[in-house]
Image (cartoon, rainbow, N blue to C red; front, side, top):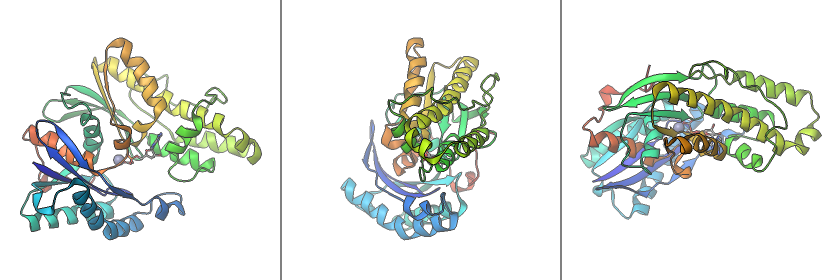
Length: 336
Ligand code: KG4
Ligand code: ZN
């Protein structure tokens, strides 16, 4: 069975072709990143994003088909991101996917974007079966959710304000690092002094799964205000390492708390921040000696892409739990 996955919830226009056999294979996964269109504003502008999706989506879908060595008529089903995400961008993807499905005479299924991020990890561990604990860390979400058989989700904890990726991006912006800053901070931090400055770790001592990153932003702002631009530049690597450490430290300590609380022996991580090498290292340090199975996506599949959306639909197809458009809402959370 050949699937086309379509992702357009934020600023990436992404399509992928996946082959569902005994194992699922990603045949192609191209995307157009709108970073340049939004960089000048320092963040994503929803209207601009929607217009760019409209311009690019057919071209990206055609590229995915071509790269996979198939034709549009080989497609058996289409999966698209139904939410959560920006309304305009979501509408473009949904309209494109449903229109194409109608033309090809194949079904189109709505997919939850967060389920997509977790399915990216499943692509590398296809024997994975719930129950397991999940950590979704992206530009819009920071969530600890328990997944049980039948796509039953229970919220363990989430951020009260900014998401982890948002913290990377906003703090990076204050340090003059452009948008998005997560990957840049990760690169600049390699081999640098993580104890150079102690940035706050909000709610760390609290025995729950709640996160808060907005105070960190203020703390970085105060730090930048109280040091000269030359000092910041000279010590940028060490500052990034210290900042990364504070975000990752919180993510790991709350995840450890949730693992203990739920007694889960498997942890699945997804979302753009799951590309972070320090997060991977520290979670591995905790899980490995305790024989907790740790599943990350391939790094290239951590950030938004079309393959994860098709993969999420395939996971559901295997359990006869696909969602029709009537069952999915653009604002839908995975767990309340
Ligand atoms: O999942 P994603 O592509 O989009 C959303 O659904 O939000 O995540 C994007 C986020 C951005 O905030 C970006 O800065 C962050 O993921 N990110 C990283 C890294 N790569 C991307 N954060 C930390 N380390 C990275 N290597
Ligand atoms: Zn995402």
